[in-house]
Length: 481
Image 1 (spheres, rainbow, N blue to C red):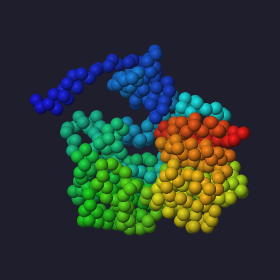
Image 2: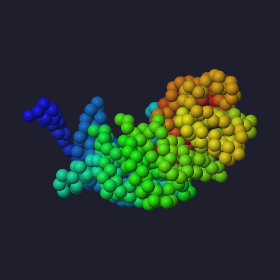
Image 3: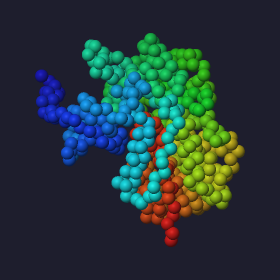
Image 4: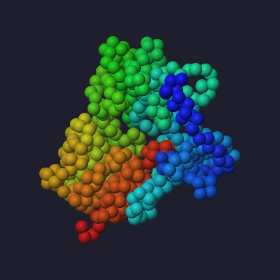
């Protein structure tokens, strides 16, 4: 027996078998969508269940006081349980709350905001304004990223049918299995022709012997497929290849172009790196426009292939309107919009204030923000490319004026501590903090409480059937500063 086989055998022999916990009631939905149950003083994170279910739990992990398990038998189903619409629900994990009625989803999202403010932020705040739900709970996303894999994820049922491990797939990465992709037949997150495009690309690739990517071995031809849409009719396709082959690329691009003439922007990218990030790579425009166009409240936005835009365009209207209503901008206000993207919020704010200054890391996004201002005849908005922590310095503030209001909409990691420190130095009268991660938002709020009080907390749901929630917090400078 080879040494690596011995190690595998030893690991298996040492793997502890935990007992099955019977008749356990799931009582809560915790952070990151983990369902919480208790057995006496034992706290258990339970997969495959929702609050209100009474289940038997097969424990598969115990470490550092944390017990995790999976529901293997149901004694009682929760009154909040509904039938998932998607056939991939049991294995995909993308819409992890699709088996819970929507009103209950909203309840737990608002609760997650409250828990983050209490436990992480440790801040005082007023009564949370009731969460604003989404009118659309399916087909609401304007962007989906699919991955190719030469060894797709097999469901337990498929495993019993024989050895099919070499089958390729095009779909979503399986949670906890970085190299496995669940092949998707139909997704309810993005409106058609999204499903037709994915399936057609998959079929063409198989028929023409395009190797699907092997993430472990780092080889293959097709790596990723990005489909972006708008509330109108614009449609952008970005196909990511691992290796450069003019013949294969041209053949695939011509197929997509001919099969789907409604595509307005067709790109390809060569990514030979060890990670999937493509923001630092050249995007080659094969045909069509270089951008998508989205309209919100009468303002037209051009969005490039690298540009961030709110994933739920329909609900973004509500988010922006609420944020600006809470900002209560005055005609003489100087406004800074941090992490501005393509000027999404900044351009909405421009008509309500003296001037608005946007800062964004992605250079392409800033170029589009400038173009969007020009296209909409907005003359009091300026945009600057650079890391916020470097750009927001004393010289910048002296050049553009001290802000009366700061609007910030950072990525999930929140604001860098140095940015929070600089905001405290600047001490604007008001901060409107928009976040897609209540945990990192609460962390930043704890730092800001030195000079600010929270006057409004407003959750907004942009991600139905998931545990994710957007949250707006308004902070006002304490008297004496």
